[in-house]
Length: 215
Image 1 (cartoon, rainbow, N blue to C red):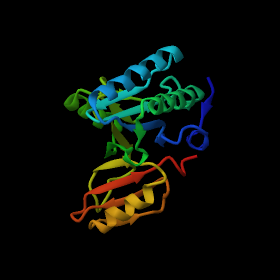
Image 2: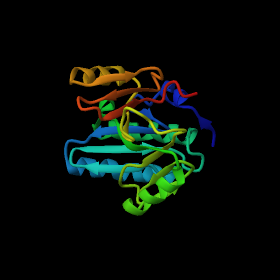
Image 3: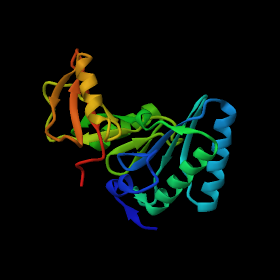
Image 4: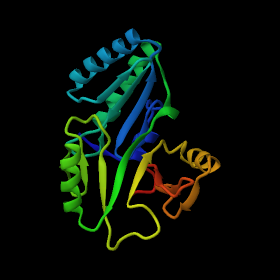
């Protein structure tokens, strides 16, 4: 098993359906009906068992989202790349189209002076568990994670809670432009393309993030 970067995954052949958000690869497939969706899920299950590498799948009527990552390394690996190609091929065999522009994910982010104390509180409230040094997550994997961000001093002039939205790198600039056209304000693009910091018309903050610029 060989670890690969987001850029290596994105530039590989056969993964045009997929986009990297943070450290995972995502694909959204338009299945048209429940039966076709179930057939694709069954085929993904067969491929995953054969590879001994298992993605996360979320199925809704007419749509399936697939997330790939290697949890033992908290990264993408060549196993994710191979399985992504096989899943895309299975979708094509079933006449299922991918929707790369529909891919997105998000998390809450909390600014904190005492990260452990804040994590303890939100784990208790949400029924979450600590992950690593700064995250908490739903043990069932059903609900968005929370990132607790270490601060040296209280942040002035903005909320202590914000949302991080991860989008495909090839739609980020358009997404930011649409948010600004919808009444948002650009607070900072100092870290772009890793993230842009925006606020809504009443000052609530969001970071629009990609995998780029994080090496």
